[in-house]
Amino acid sequence: MDTEALRWFQHVADGMTVTEVADIYGVSQPGVSRALSRVEQEAGTPLLQRSGRTLRLTLAGAAFKQHVDRLMVDLDDGIAAVEQLLDPGTGVVSLSYPLSLGTWFVPKLIRDFRVVRPRVRFRLQRSAVGEPGAISRLLATRAVDLEITTERVRGPGVQWRRVAIEPLLLAVPDDHHLAGATDVDLARVAGEPFIVRRAPSGMREKVLGLCAAAGFEPEIAYEVDDLPTVRGFVGAGLGVSVVPTVGAEATTQLGPVRFVPLRDEEARREIGIAWLAERRLLPAAESMRRYAVRWGATSDARA
Image (cartoon, rainbow, N blue to C red; front, side, top):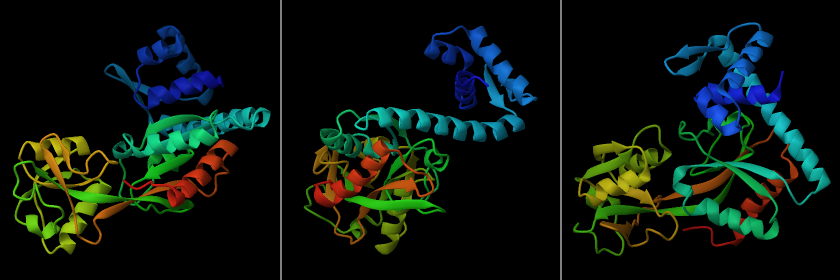
């Protein structure tokens, strides 16, 4: 099978339209459609079915897609391995990370790593939301080499090392009675409405656990999808929340939101790096893995 056609099949199976694939690769829409038909002919059964303007996987397509994903990862690894044999200082590291670390932690880590390996390139992806304590589908399917996480993760063959500890803060509106406090116990807001992340969310579970340890069950007023929205709802006076520091950005105030350090013992979250033990990392990715673990131990990685 044509490997380019298999890549197009991957894109369509992941939700892209034929038009989008054609635009990205600079080919005609009929050309993409014919390539997909050839893949189906060689597979011996329909792999895609039309649903409105998009194509959806058939049962056979879903089974086939898992093998295509692994095949393309191995192919990319093979090409990268040859590149790195020709020039050991180069290579591509595929890295996934949660949205909340994209504004400070990941850029800082990559910046420092590129000081020692300036020609290594990165392929970055946002981690898909999964169950707390588990790696994302990206790492599980070997679509990425390494994954930055905001909690300890476990699973068969999963390796994890802590890189940093990020303090958690109480977020309150700037006219809140605790807005001027230097630090506070979470129990002080036991009777107030809370803004929390929608499940599944490791941050949500962390907040609920902190509240339970403080002796109360929070009154959840709103459930939202991301931390910027949490801060927006708090700033609008709709409740309080517990949020990560996001680097040095949120140590005291961000717009109409005040951030107060929590005295509670577990008011922190672990940032770590995860990889699959069974997968032999190529030199660039292995160098990044080792660097991240060492970087966390020797640099000011915490917020």
